[in-house]
Length: 136
Image 1 (tube, rainbow, N blue to C red):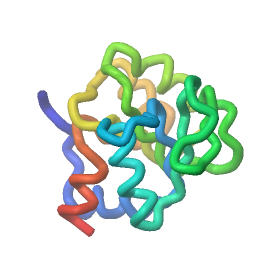
Image 2 (cartoon, rainbow, N blue to C red):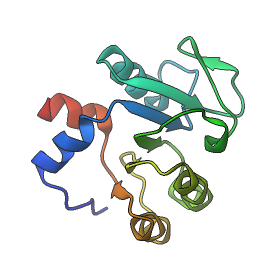
Image 3 (cartoon, rainbow, N blue to C red):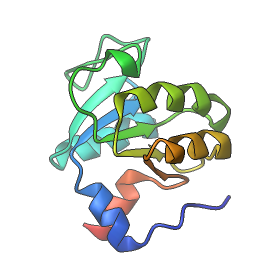
């Protein structure tokens, strides 16, 4: 699977954004959708979980939908299958994040183009944890 064309410097700039809403964040410690945001939280990121099946994850209130998240969102980090991304992106656009980050293995051209047209950067098929370890 291809990935976006951002340079290392551009990814570092994106990684400097600290308010991350994680769609599909998991309660289960062995899943990437849990240990990636946990790692980010341990590295000074403000994590907001979005998971309709959890009231709280990692001691933080979990929201059923992105639209319920209060305040500013810098990055929407998505841990959902590629075929489920489009409605997530449509909802995320309304919150006007600077970046939508689709985790490793996630790519949806239609959703990505919609976000770009709204002026939002889109990172896809990359892991935030791996990129943070590599570049920061």
